Image (cartoon, rainbow, N blue to C red; front, side, top):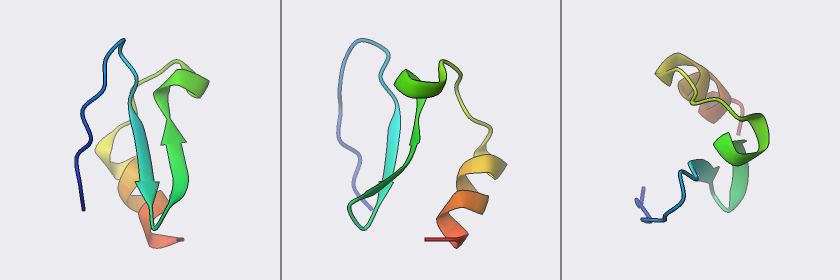
Length: 42
């Protein structure tokens, strides 16, 4: 797992090169449980 810094309030999570969450697209910061659940399906 790598943390890649950004700016402008962008928060994205990728697993094996696949984007599983984007705060920029949804407009909301996810709960950790949401991210964990999405990571299990990748």
